[in-house]
Image (cartoon, rainbow over all chains, first blue to last red):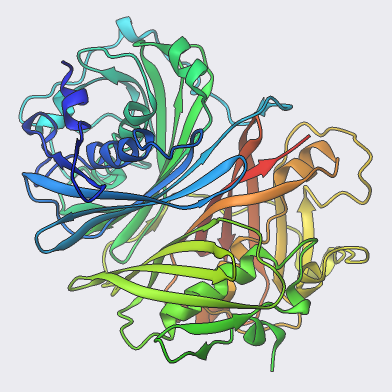
Length: 268
Length: 268
């Protein structure tokens, strides 16, 4: 069983909710990798008997640190329309709610389609790029094979401030795993905090809120399989304790699969 | 009293919630302008006695059409930390929840700050640009003075497809009103659906989910006052019934005040 399938695994509870468990394989510096928390909360919707359609939008607010161990998830369809469905999902531990999410699901229908965003340019083939080292990094980083063309995680926090925080990379699960919605969502939170890239200083940070929009249907995910995705990420503004960053995830052949945005607390 | 103050006005109810009312001044083609709905839900947090700090992130899912008339708002602080606070806000009418929002508030502290995004370039002075006509437009459009440098709302839906959906404009409330958080949030939903700009065809659309990140504190809003803001917006991908768009709002002197993202349902 892939470690990712373990981290999104759910055990139903008699009250109609379910139980999840953090995994050492996806540990962050403190507590679990946020992308894993997103993925398991989305999975609680996708496995719910009331589910209608596939995810279009997902937002999660990290309300408090998640302690290593079990946590409860409750997922509730707040509104089901003809072709869209709105979910509220809460994760809680003993002392209260630790993550609060909403998801929009929809039945998509074929329409006129077009992509205005441009895929990352001048990307060398993944095989021609070195894999980022994962030594002395949190466990979750080892779960991804990341190959940077630009804006890599600093080898050393030398305080050499960069002129921007833009990254371009190839990435996928390690070991490779066929892409699905929870995995794509987790990957959307795998862009390192832009302040690390920009300032090359280790400062306390924490994502406060993340939103991911899905542009792929199940067919597009199946077509991607377990190949490398292209990712790009950048910051807009760092200001008095918070910064925001936006990213894009593209298929191996240049289809935009997801756009993602987050605001991050930082201390300096 | 400014029409905007009327549309965000709240009447407390005995159960600890409050009552709001749609306003003909902010009517959209069907139901109210979504930005007004966002603003009044945020206002329910800002006026709440438990409020801690100022808004950092706000997400609203439009779960069902809002009927003209009164609606109930309940705002609950799901978690209050030392310097951040997480809110869940619901608006409901007789037949259920019509809008579901979360807000993150925070006490900001001075830190290293920098803006990586670039303000719209080559913007002529607002006085040198014509105001967009508001005849035969929904009422809410008349509440804003919009002056486009690029990507204006089409004079006619002539079906002449454009090469992109990028807009750059000056905009402010009309009549002018000193900027505050609810007004900035409403303005963040005032970028027209990109599909209208791109395809110059009128098709049924509806925002499904919007997220706005605030980069301004109360001081920055006070410094802006009632002057014109600069705005820019673009789409990433239109695909099988949904597209996403991102926008930025800048102060008159080029400070990034907010970034905003949404996913929109469309039919063609």
